[in-house]
Length: 124
Image 1 (tube, rainbow, N blue to C red):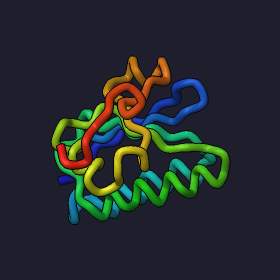
Image 2 (image 1 turned 180 degrees about the horizontal axis):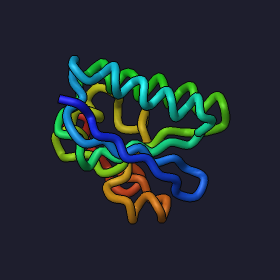
Image 3 (image 1 turned 135 degrees about the vertical axis):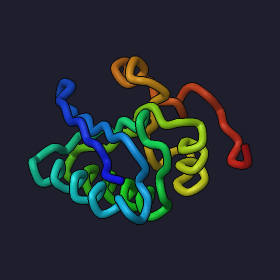
Image 4 (image 1 turned 135 degrees about the horizontal axis):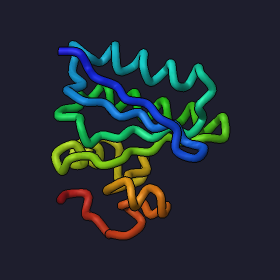
C-alpha cells in the first residue's frame, strides 16, 4: 500500500500530511518524501499524523534524526495530531520531550505543545 502525501506551507513551516501505514513496506517512501522536503530547503517541518494508522520504530528513529539535523540548521520538526496509540509509541521510544507534539492544528497555531500543558508519567 502506498502512502498518500499532501504538502502545504503554513507561515514559515512546511506541513507534510500522510495517509496510511508507515511500516517496512512504506518506510523508504516516507523517508524519501521527508528528505525531499529537507533538501528543498524547509527547515521547519510539521508532520501531521492524523491520517497515519501505524508507524514502525525505525521511522520514529528517523523522525528524531531529522529533528536533530533541522535543529542544527536553525529549524525544527513538529508532530501534529497523532492518534493515542501512535502518541504512546512516540513517548515510549523518544521520551516526552524529544519530539514537540501538538494535539491538534489549533494548538500548533497557538504554539501550545502537548507536553508543556500536561504532566505525564513515563509509565502511563
